[in-house]
Each structure stands twice: as structure tokens, then as C-alpha cells.
Length: 284
Image (tube, rainbow, N blue to C red; front, side):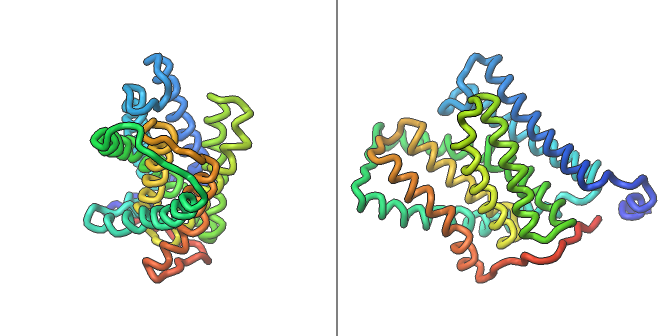
């Protein structure tokens, strides 16, 4: 008797709403655990490569991956491959497409910003900038890009797309991501952060969901997410550069990728994706 037969004769798997709820609540609990770990370490959360930042990254990637693995095995009873997280030999191209989908519009935005009088000058030696960027890239990949994409554009989008068209699934996962991310910020920063954080989470998750549809591969979402957060943290919070004209940078460098990123991905792939119809999640 093979695995498919076992699935067919076993008890019915949980319904879609329960599976979505379990994984969403699991994601909340993981990041609450990260906050508690920061309290135990008496450290500022995610602070510029300190012990708390590395601890956060370890907890996020280990528990986030474990959550999705357990959900696929015991709730979905479907193979890991259905999530669109391909192996290394197939991952490099969608990862690059995702990264370039952010970098190219950002470069255009940087040109506009410099023309408008913005200045960005190094605050530390070049060797320290390079080392910090390498460390920051690893931290963002482990702490944010990989676990968040695996949960939201991987598990949740895949399950939602079995019950609704891709464009509806994009907005459904975006709503879940926005509630999750904004809720966590409210817990730590109070309700005054809602006006700033909710539009950011909503816009980001819609664009990432669209990239998931266009490319059909989760690594594209990881690539876009990764370079966005590395650039944002390097310029704005790691004290590597002195930025004169932050508001202009936000309105150009960081806005254009959200407006043009999906179009750039379509041009690279010469494909617009499949937006209509539900996509089955086969058991083998």
C-alpha cells in the first residue's frame, strides 16, 4: 500500500479554515516567542547584529520551517514540493528575478532622489560596510525573508489557491500578513504604529503575492523581500550611511519597486502568470 492509498483510506484531513487558522496562529506564537526571548536577553529586538538579532533569526527560521513542515505533513497531507520552494539548481533564477525586480526600480528611484538633491554618504569604512552587508543579508534571510515567505506566500497562499482564484488568494494572504505584522507591531509599539505599518505590510504582501503568481516560485518572493529589507536596514537603521533627505528616498527608492516590481518580473519571464481558476494541490 503506497502513501497515496494511505491518505485515501485514512481520516479526512482538517478543513481549509482550520488549517489556515492553525498556521496563522502558529506564526503569531513564533514571533511572540521571539519577543519573549528578547526580554530574557535584556536586549533590543533585532538590534544591528547583536545577540538578540541572531537569536531572533535562529528562532524564526527553525520554528517557521518546522511549523510549515508539520502543517504540510499532518494537516495538508501533501508533499513539500507543492509550496514552490524548489531546490538549489532551480532556485537561483527565480531568486535573481525577485531580487532584480526590487533592485532595478530602486536604482531608477535612486537616480531620481539624487537628482532631487538627496545625498547618501558612508559613515564607516568600506570594509565595515561590506562586512555589515554580508551579516545583514544572512540575518534578513533567516529572520524575515525565508520564514515569512514560507508561511505566507508558501503555505497560506498555496492552500488558499486551492479554494479561490490566484488574484483572490493574493489579497487573502495579504490580509492575513497585514493583520499578523501590524498586530505584532501594536503589541510592542502601541496603536500609534498602525497608520505607518498597516499600509507597508499590505502593499508589500500584495506585491509579493503577485510575484508568487507570476513566477510560480517562492524563491522570487524571498529574493524581493531579502533585498528590500537589506537595503532598508542598511540605509536607515544600521548607521552605515548618513542619508540627507530620507523622505525623498522613501518616496523614490523604496516606493518605485512596489509600483514596478511585478512588471519587471513579467518582463524577465515573458509571462504574466495564471490569475484565474483554482489550482489543485495533488497528494503526490
